[in-house]
Length: 614
Image (cartoon, rainbow, N blue to C red; front, side, top):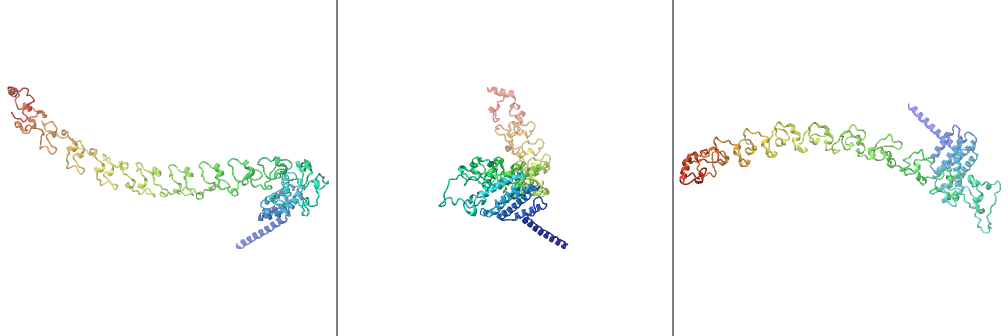
């Protein structure tokens, strides 16, 4: 088994080495042409080799070499069915050269002059030989014409700062300056005048500035005024600056326009080295559009389709673009906390990375009815809702009733569950009256009272350990209404028991008439027959019945042998005195009349206050 594995690894290595060698050979020699079966493999090898060249200057040299080969292929395939395919590959190769030129440092551009001139010559030859007519050819001709114009127009020796490529095709023979003798000593200047080019000459063909399109219809004097040829500007802006709209692209007109028409314009971003999209396209942005470069999403062919490269655009603030994509009540943080840049789904929320500690800001709608209103993390983890375990202490959950109100039996204590229960289980439970601040006993124990029981607080008699033994503290209970609890015997004093009894026992009892405000003696005390009908207090004291003392009774109590019997004088149990009960009325009135004392009826005490005769 190990031998087979080793042979397999060796075979893979040999194939890799062989493939690398073949690829290098194909990319270097390029024996195949577009349309041949092995050309796609050769093209792939060429592209991979180009991507491995780190030095920008060396990469341009290699790509210019490839563009020259594609130009040779087009010449060879002109007039064949594969001509259009060869033209397409030449257009691609030329675009790659233009793209790579943008990365070359300015001080190394002159090094590329010879390679680019050679490539340009081959491409020009290929375009002249091509027989097809399609948009690819038109685009390539326009781009190449602008490229040749740039090559021919700038001289790094005279004005290197204004030369984006640092190249020049046109150089005087032997390096001489054609204008060097203009002011030399002994040189005679003559007035310039129009001189026709010899027929068939390069001057007559105007090859140094091809007169194509609308330029071909212009007379020479339109550009060469007053017969002057030397120093005539060959840049578009020299003639067409006055037709540029406001805020127009500041580069060369040839980057977009051809000599056929202004309107048929196509901008070659690579050729113009245009990498600041916003310099031209700020007006094309919709409201609330991404503020970065257009190239982060769009290509230079069309606005759509567009693909946004978040990493290349350094786009880390998702909400700046996607705030309108959020559903109602969505997480307010960055989209990258859950989503990736490929698609919204699938999404996975990283609570820790998002610093998401306020669970209810997202999950309020996930709570069942009457659920705990605190943070979800008090019970749940970020992986799943179940299993869940509630940490009362961590959640600061002290209001038990906010969650467990539905767990209480009927007529249960309505205070906090923690007064009796712990956070581990409902049972065993022990009620701490003091900790619960439970002073209203009847709110829980009203059903525990026997019939006709004291309606006050249980704590007046009982403690929190057990019902018995019980001791009633009348003073602590503020129990002043004795009759509310104690039934009297028949015909008992109707006032408060405390008027006679104390809270220790019924007997002995002592009635405090004064404290009780008891002035109606007859309300409690029954009189003997024929007894004085007035208040007992007129004769008796509250100490006992026997020691009788009638205050203000100056008349002798033993008058006529009465022996202290009130009824002897006060018949009918009233305060009135009827002396005629003992004394004959006729005899008495006759006796007083003899002494001229008249109208004595009922007035005996006025003359006899002490019962004396005189």
